[in-house]
Image (cartoon, rainbow, N blue to C red; front, side, top):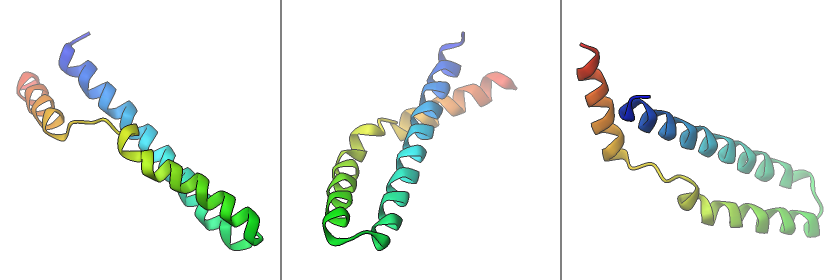
Length: 77
């Protein structure tokens, strides 16, 4: 497989993972409204843990992604 294509596929997989994490966070914080205080606090702690670690979950180098996309576009012409 072309190295540039593999880089793009890797980035796509990471972005899909980030999207899934955001959907989970959104669901957690939406659910908090209907929970009692103890459960809401537990959900808030879990959500905060995920949010604090979010930067580590998404390890896409935007500049590298732009370079690879430009190379692929140039190679396709």
